[in-house]
Image (tube, rainbow, N blue to C red; front, side, top):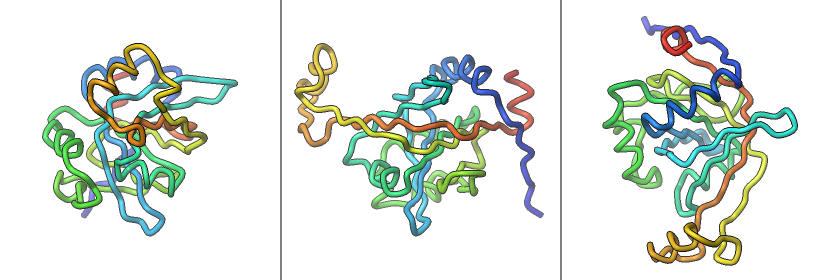
Length: 185
């Protein structure tokens, strides 16, 4: 018999205070899926959280060449999943290969589970999940950046058509399994 997880809804204010500590400890896993249901996962580390006009947002920076970028724009949604301790190898793998060519869920022994609201899966093995609905995209372009960001792109030799895209998404749900919620709050 499959074990079902009991989840606890989290308050954005409480979570956002803890999020900086969680982000400093380990990258998170972003999951999305095509309209046909093909799930993909990638490791992310350029994540920001905030509130504007009473709406809670996440900002995620992803290169347009990434398969997940294509799927986020197709589905209009993604989830962010906070890995548990001991998931380092899965996090590393999901950040080192493309989902266009490989099934990263299978290779990293991760389980895609239906989310509560958005058409993107959550990752069962992770302890905290944020469901995010895409609200906007900003493209970094050579003429729109300066300073250390411009130096980064110039030094790395990044072609202008592969500068990061900034995805703005409303957080529509945040929840954790009971054990994680009990330990963190």
